[in-house]
Amino acid sequence: MTQNESTTIDWGPLAQPLHTEVPDDPRPWRDNAFLCFWDPAQGLSGVMHISASPNAAGGRRARVSVRLGDQVVEVIETLEFGTWNSPSITFAPESGFTVDSPQLSGRISTTPLHPVAVFAGESAPKAFSLDSEHPIHHYQQSAVVTGELTVDGSTVTVDGQGYRDRTWGFRDESSSVEEYYGTMWVFPDFSVSALRLLGQDGRAATLGYVLHADGRRQDVTGMSLTRDGAGLFLATRIATSDGGTLDVRSTGRTATFWCPMGVEEQTGPTLSAYDEFDHLLAGDGVEGFGLLEQGMTRKLF
Image (cartoon, rainbow, N blue to C red; front, side, top):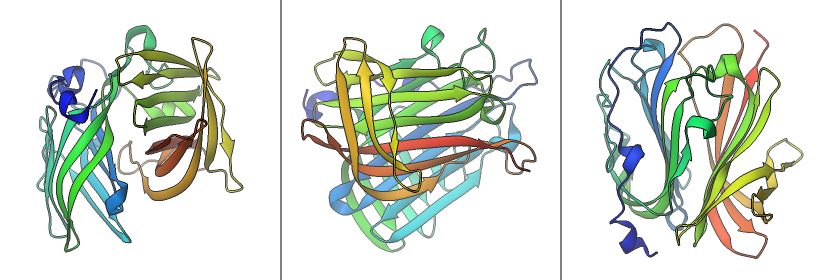
């Protein structure tokens, strides 16, 4: 599949419209959209993160964080009920987003690249779901990313890649997740969308997919983790249901951002999540790029 051919594919569940109905349940019900994107040739990495949750007012926000070379700009704004859009950020789930602030402006468009990763029903990440009867709906898919951004006065034409994420359902990470890490990695002929999670109930799970340009999906059944001296990601070995393995190693970290998920002010156990962008090298020598997210619940308060 070429990048031009990928434009004929529909975003499907990732284009799910905003939910405005308020569930008759006191637990947090979140309606999130996420895009990580990069253009290594331009020294560009970025994240758009929207949480338009109908019954969690303290957690509604729109955020765009961008690093261009040594310049880092973040726009973080509160969302009103029933909208994707903040004063400076406009999100269109079928296409992309625009941002218009003094330090960061421009537009980003996305088109699908590899097949969609479906984490729903029996495949929903249970550590993120508040109970098994109401699992979250979670979808991820790699993307071709194009557009133009002006970062603190420097304008760049974007011709890169990225990963989209769309999630809705009952979700409260600080009360259900002990630790997790997840991949949104893109290589020339495949991408990797996978999670390894430890719930606060002690249950561990690994789930996800290696998604190929020819339409094949390999289920991920295991992910080892090798860390460096600071406890940061260094390498993984991914096992798939067909008996195969995929070794991936970071060859250089280019950008990092914190990933706020909860309400603005919390007392008690709180999930702290961290995103990093890495140059990647697969075991067969194929180079890739992507985002690794690591989260753990902080318990001192």
